[in-house]
Length: 235
Image 1: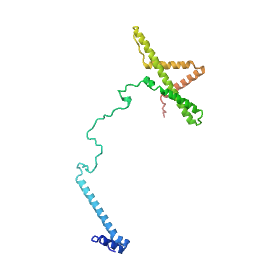
Image 2: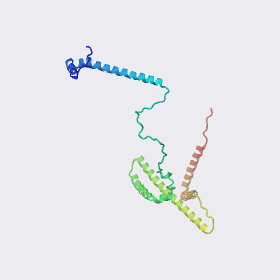
Image 3: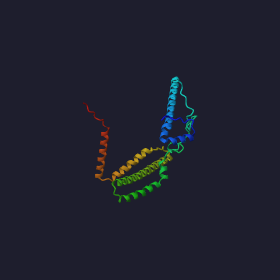
């Protein structure tokens, strides 16, 4: 059946025609040809646009690029460069805060030692009931860490007391007309640590001392071995 032109027909006439012909026959004679024509028209228009754009590109190949006015600008566009005025909030890099003081820290946060001591007692009680090997090892490590922190605090306090005693002696010498000599804190700390080692060594038995010397020699041997140059194989 040939294509039926419905361009001059009213909507009522088209519906009446569809009713008479049936949906399938109406689609073949009216709908499908019309859709094909529209698609062909769109394809032709697209090809024409591509041809025009290609020609314009060829004509203006070396012309400067034109920015489309339809493109939206960014929301936060910085027209004038503004210097970074962000304030430093980290106290480590703020000169107004001052230098860190272990003495002031230990004095203000001395309650931490009491909290850690309570935690240590709780952990020790739980250790007796725990059967999981990994969990038990983690709890042991926590107890050892608390002990180590307590020793470190005690040593810091001892070094400060020794330093204060030394300064007091030097001030007394100044009163008598002598020149004061103030030692460096590092030297006092080293001397304090050496005294602790000697005190601990004096309480050890001969067997413990021998074991300690053997461990020290073994550690030194490993250190010496690691510092030796690697041997190269010559073929």
